[in-house]
Each structure stands twice: as structure tokens, then as C-alpha cells.
Image (cartoon, rainbow, N blue to C red; front, side, top):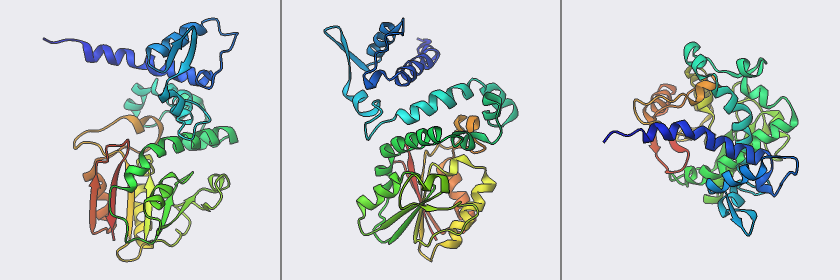
Length: 301
């Protein structure tokens, strides 16, 4: 029998997301119970219904999952990414129809400023730190799976391009202690993370390495800019050197709208990445579905 179950679930999905976003924003999972919130009990009960809080003897306490991922001081916290979703993605997705009509991201339409999503996040120290915190929390979920997707034991030095907090470089080094791992990122990012090499991977010389990595980088850019970046990486690698890519690999023939909202880029299938990599000169390209949020591609010069 035909039912509307899938449609009804989609109708309701944004309400559940926004309930969690609001609770995080109000500090609920950090124990805040602001007295001036007239409908606070309704929000707390909604979080109970979502399985994010438990009600015990009239008090509301975090579930183990919320304790680990929704407390702002947890090392595994996803609150940075939730703030990014609430403050940036949620408003921009309200303009999806215009993004589809025009084929361009929605930052200026939503926030009225030029420069796009990255300059927007870096406009203040607080917004920059919150964005990077979000990327770190998200990266901790997938980087160990990416680091273990291939045998990287024959490499010696990894440079993680645009690696921010270094979660991917750290995951590779933990699995392969003999690999020296370092991050190369913009100066405003590098000053937050000691040991990071400052630079722009589109314009500055790349630090010497026999393995580069890019995690959630390529999906931000157009094919033309990716070709330019891959060409620079290929030229910097020695023979037999590699490039490790961490991205969500789409099923063949599937095109997602996610990146359309925020950047000039898009997510791609394994075959699309392979075509770009082979065009850049890489002779061997393998992909792996990791089962984590991000998948992995390894290309060898």
C-alpha cells in the first residue's frame, strides 16, 4: 500500500533539527536552565522526545550521547558544527529555490555581505574559532576511518592541506607513528594551532612531503580550481608520492544540493574524482567507502 510516511518524515525533519539547534544555542546540554525562558519546559520535553535528554524525578539530564557530543567542553563536541548549521546553513537553505534558479551560493542573499562563506566565518575571532571547532568535532568522527582506509605505511612525511586543527594528520600519525605529519593552512588559522605551517595552498609553495591530504577541501571548489590545486600537488610530489582525499563519495549519477547553498563547489562521485586526478597526471587512483561520514580516495603519482 502506498503511504506518505517518507513525505511526512521529511515535512517534520527540520523541526527536530531546529529543536536540537535551539537547545545547544541556549546551553541546555551544558546544564543551563534560564529562568527567563517562558516555554523552557516545552523545549526540555521536546529534547526528551528526541532522545537527547532524560527526565528523572522532575529533573532533566543528558543522555550519554548528548554528554559526549552536545556538551561544549567535551573533546568530541559537535556544538561548533551545530552553531554553524544553525547560524549559517539553516538561514541559507531557506533560499534553496533561488540557488537552484541561479546556480550560485546564497551567502550574500542571506547575510547581505560580500566575500562568501569563508570570509564570513573569519570575520571575527569568535566566529572563526566556532567554525574551526565545528570542523574539528566533525573531523574526529571520520578521520580515523579515512586514515585506515589504505595502507599508508610506506610514506614518510604527510602535509595536510587546509587541515585546521589537524584531526586528519593526527589520525594518520596515530595509526602510522613513523609518518611525520603536519598541517598547512591559512595564516589566520595557523596562529590558533601551534606547529601549523602558514600559507595558501592555491598560491604559496607547498611544504615538501611524499604524502599530501585534503579533507573536506575539494568539495568547496569548482572543477577549474580543483584542477589547479591538483596540478600544484602533483608537481610537488616525488615519484610514488600520494594524495589522500577525505570526502563524501556520491553514488554514481547522484548530484547533491548541499554545497550549492554555501560555496561554488559540489560533492562528487568516486569516478568524478578519479577523472580529475588522472587528468592531473596521477597514475593510480583507488577509492574506499569507509562507513564513516567521509570516504577516502588515494592517488599515486
